[in-house]
Image 1 (cartoon, helix red, strand yellow):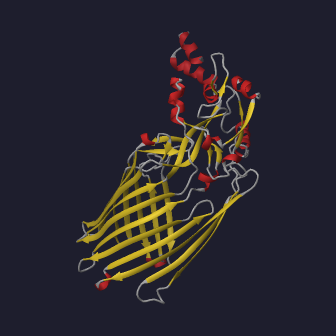
Image 2 (tube, one colour; image 1 turned 45 degrees about the horizontal axis):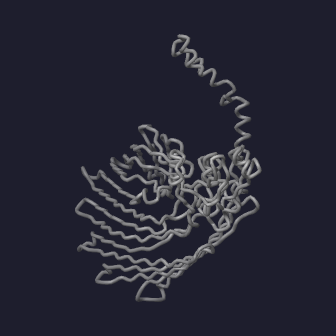
Image 3 (cartoon, one colour; image 1 turned 90 degrees about the vertical axis):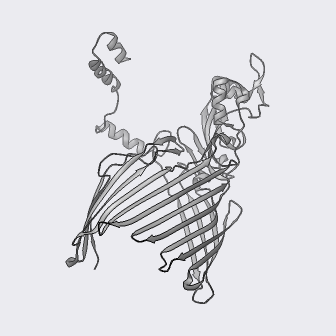
Length: 479
C-alpha cells in the first residue's frame, strides 16, 4: 500500500521502495537488538508448539545382539547363528509423539542363520544362503530368505561375477507409529492401533459448526484420519466444483511392514590398467510404506448419510463442514496398494594414465516406478536423483611424499518430499580438492583440502540450509 500510494503521487520508484521498506519495518524486531534476542530466546525455549519451537526428546532405545560362527567346528561349510533384541522408549513430552501422559515403549527381536559354502577348484564359486525371522510386538513376524552367488573367473582371478536374490521387510519407524505433530500444512498422526485416540487438539468452529454442535470449540482426536476422511486431492477438487461427486473416501488402513524382493547382478574386473565395476538391481515392493494426505470433517460422516437441516433442505453434514471450513488436513501413515518398483545401475571405471596418475569415473542411475494416478494422495519420499556422476583425478606420489586429488561431483535435479513440504532440488556440481604430504621422519601425514572449492552454494534436501565451502587441515600421526 505504501509503495503504490507513493508512486501514485509521482514519488520516484527508488524513494517509494525506501518508504515502503520503512513502513514494513515498523514494529519489526531487528536482529542483534535486545528485543530480538529476548523474543528469540523465549520462542526457542518454549516447548509449547503453539507458541514456541523447542522440541523436547529424551527418547531412547536399548539394543543387544549376538552372533556365533561355527566355522572352527565344522569343515563342510561356514555356519553362523545370531539374533538381536531392541526396545524403544519414546519420551518427547508430547512435542513429537503422543506421549504427553508418559513414555511409550515397545520392542522387537530377530533371529537369523547363514550358511556359506565354496565350490570348484581354488574355491572359485561361493554360495551364501541365509534365513532371518523378525517379530515386532505390534505386527506379525516375517521370514526373509536370501541367496547369493559369487564366481571368480580368469587365470589370475581378475574377473568377479556376482548375483543375488534377496527378500526383506521394513518395519514402520517410531514416527510412522506414534507421531502426533502439527507440521504446518497438516497434522501428522502415526497409525499404531492406540495412537490416533491420543492425538487430541482443540479447534475453533465456524458459526454454522457452532450452531450444529452447540459449542464454539471442539476437542477432536486423530481417529477420523483412519475411519472418517476424504482424500486431500478430492477435497481440493470439491472446493473448486462444489460437486459432492468429486469427493473420494480415504480411510487409509493402519500401517503394516513393507516387504521387498530384490534382484542384483554385478561384475568387477581388471582389464590391463582399467578396473571396471558395473552392477544393476531391481526392487519390487509390497505394501510400500509412506504417507497419505487426507481431510477430516469435524462433523458428519464421509459416507454422507448424516444430514443437517439448511434453508434449502437437508444437506450431508460433512459437506456443510467442508463448505464452512470445519475440517482439518492430516497426513496418515499407511501403505499403498499401487504397484511400486525401483531399479537402477552403477558404473565405475578407474585407470592409470601418464604413468602413475589416477583417473576415475562413477555413474549411478536410480528410478522409482510408481504411477501417481493410481494413488494421488500417497507420498513415496523417494528423494533420490535419477542421475549422479563423480570424476576424480590425482596422484598419490606426484613427487616425493607429495600427492593431490581433485574430484568433481554432479547431481541431477530431483523432487524432495517431506511432511512439511515438497520441493524441487536443483541440479548442482561441486569441485573438491586436496593436497597431502608425508613426513616420514615424524611418522606423520598432513592433508590440506576444501570441499566445494568453487563456492557455489547448493542444497540436497527441501527446507534445509544451503551448503557452502568447507576447508580443512589435518595432521595424522601413525606411530
